Length: 326
Image 1 (cartoon, rainbow, N blue to C red):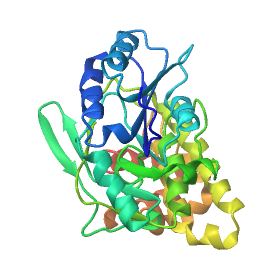
Image 2: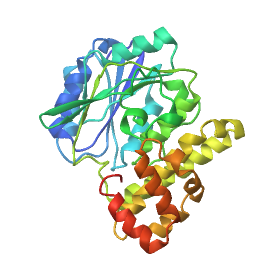
Image 3: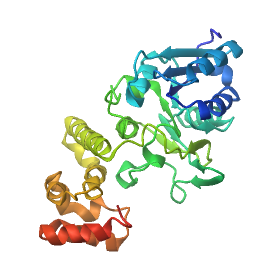
Image 4: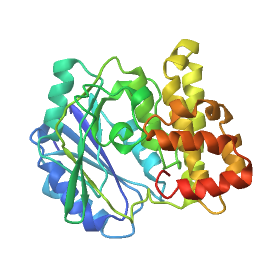
């Protein structure tokens, strides 16, 4: 194991991903600045061949700085990432999911952008790989930074995996996600880091390969996802509020959008929870135009009507809306 102090710590939670882990590991160890990287793997009590694969990889790449931590029981992605953050020694952090892979120059490209621009967070577009199909998810136009007030609540803007982040920004400000809350855990950390960052920038080069994997842990049941989203929306809203009125008001548009996105899942399940939808984050209902800025205008108007219509009519309207908008 290399004793050189790492510049970047790459944190990879691993759970039952043996089908894809080999490609992930290969891409990590092929990084052009691999000798400056600390690789931290958190095996989340995998029951397949992942533990053996990690052990073999560490033995075969003994010249690299590799650390494998094994959870005694499955804890989920949030707790595993938190463990990795607490162990990391690099100046910057990167996060890679074990069923994804990255371009060989990802670490070097993002690091160069961070140091050249004195940026706390550097983001890049990413590839979406679905079987043999590949497309690129890009930031809008000539976006040079992420403004969370105008950012859609999506993977591109609020995932940790397509970003390099200064470790002190997360650690010193206690931006860890909540253990066992595994839906939006990266959004929880990322939005707060972006809000506090002195500077964040976008490098318009896709470097991360996101694999569409229906067996991923994030594909949880509807109720669990809704509960986690509501939990994080409340926690994030309270965190922004705790930083004072000016800070809260500065990010008010983002918080409205976040709370709307959290409660929208009440309209997706059966039965449709229209009464609960109207009463949860009720303050959003009078700001739906602002909270739904990423939607087409007809849908934004429809949601306004949904908020004010009598319940039976609203339920019927929701059934029509969710076919396309939800």
